[in-house]
Image (cartoon, rainbow, N blue to C red; front, top):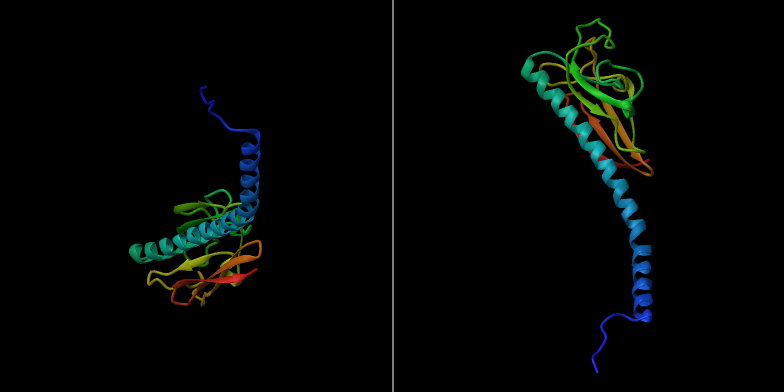
Length: 171
């Protein structure tokens, strides 16, 4: 008598039970991984914009700044969570909200990632032709940019020489 090929109902139920157990264990870990990757992406984008601004300032021999911008052409006071631009810095005492040559536009960070900077860095981060950060009026500019997603975060620390480094923090 020929043997029938297939699976029984019991085998199917056991397989489904094992799949449900594995999914229950894996999904919370996957959510944490997704949260971490969003934070890493936002941090890498901001660090890339800092490196671009610094190198362009040195190459061009003129000031370059990073500022929050929702429309991709004007600096705004909305914070970096709406997006930011890298642009040529205006001469002091010009207003940074005036349009200028935009070198690169960055969209906002991935969902649920917030970006906050302290001091004048919340309005702009400006690089001089020597690669150092200074306010447009020439004053010292250094500080931190904090990126948070839930309880995990990263802090970008920008020294007075314009160098940036990243450290992990709790939010």
